[in-house]
Length: 480
Image (tube, rainbow, N blue to C red; front, side, top):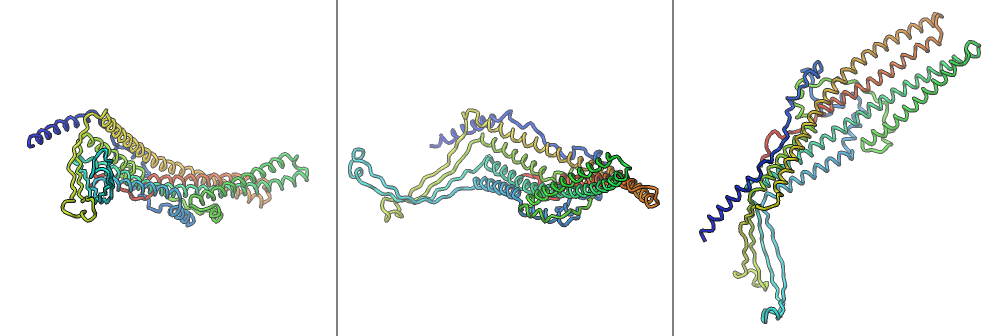
């Protein structure tokens, strides 16, 4: 009995070496990009300042509108979209717990009563022809020692996916807050558009009244009168369109807040400030630690790498330890006697030899998953840095446009004031005053649109910088 053991050990060693060699030639092709290697200094030159900070967790409060603050708080408290993200995170956590449970021994307790009667044609009496009962109590245990780390790698992969799902749930909150803020900014612009259209309609009505007087006096032929009537109707139509947009945006805000349309009726005209836009000077090296989608993508990469480890471990032999201990007897009184003891168990060794390429295909799939996760991470990182640059450059350009529009508005205001002075002096007519008022209204509407775009750029930057959410990246290996 002593000779088979060394022989079996030698055979297992040879097969083990053959199994390990079968993983050759299957390696990942993708490589992670380092954030620091993506230069953005020239694109952000003049925008990044040492005094600038990463967004606060409640960055939308920088707009200085309590009504916006309340709407975002309501959305974060009861939006169904967040419940979906949270449910996905809980499911990923449960899967990680299942993977962890697979690493521990299993112990079970069993009790059963079995009956058997053999026909006398198979077994003569007294065995055949008689119904016999057997009572059995057992305790069974099983454990896979996981020498090669397959179960541990599966657990680590599940942990990585769970952490990614948790961060993605946080990213959903950031996206929701940004969507509420953008919709609120659009609502403010719609109110401005309605006000401008109503002012233009009033101006056109004044021109119509003046034109009717001139036609009755024989000073005009009526062409200008009809043109002004058309302008008044067009302005009122624009005011109605702006009101329709206001109603739709109120409904959208109510839905984002997880409420019905009646909630939107209580939303009054926004009173938004214009926050500064200045990213921190340490971009892009620390972007990974602040962007939830980048950090989640990094966890997916780590989970995929653990998947490769698990697939490689499947090439090694597996050892399962199992044992069963119990008592069995035909009569209940004999169940706990010394002769009723039942024992079974021992180690089991299995090694894949001819598996039709299944393990190699599985490993190829795991490496492809890793390459896909790396490519997704790289794409997410590139997109994050681009979004920061887009928001900063948009804000910079819009600031210049707003400055020019304000200067033009100031000049138009001075011209209008001069015309009013001339009218009071009897040199200019009411028609001249109304004509000078038109550029003012147009520039007011243009400024309102530019301010809305500038506020959107501020939201874009807050979101591009991670929205103040604290996340953790897998910069160290998962421990036991």
